[in-house]
Length: 286
Image: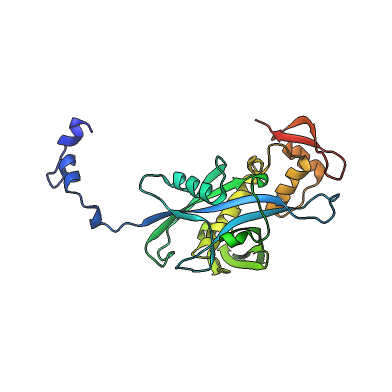
């Protein structure tokens, strides 16, 4: 602190040093701050015919709440920010604790601060999106016994009026199916959407999930973000499958190869033991 700052006095005749000595944080109501994580991965669907190219499935990690509020409801992984960390550090910590992986793509989505979004108290959520290479995710039947599960996800518009759009978010894991319904104005972002049906998701997590989907889909059109969902080596067909499952649309193979060309680098390696003709492997163009 400079000498000039210490000597300046406010309208009460206090220097900054005197003001800080008398300051009472408890005089002002303060919110709790949490981070909520939209964690995406893409995995292969199980195929009975090993000669058939495996379909891709987009998955999102959900946690089954074991305490009030929203006891037994499914929610995004997250937690409160500690006094010694930034929101990004808290998000990275939660990611490590919930998935066991580190050093993955992490991006802030939005800060949700709507009054009443948490029935306990005033809680603001700084949400983040993480992308994990599916080969680093281990999924097996019954893994929700640990109160966490990777849900297969889809998101589509189901109704359109002159100025309104209604979207359905479907999340499924084994026999559990969650369907959330959101409404938004045309041309507006999902940060301003209204939850018509939470579908069994806790808090306002249906809206946060919709925002994550919106961000991921939007960035795929002008960035190489999808490569963060890929292993180190992959085929162009596998990369195309990831684009198609995220964007929920098909691409002509030739057109996709032109789109992918600047993002990838050809290697001298080929796939092995996959039941069909070997395909050339690519990697991210660094």
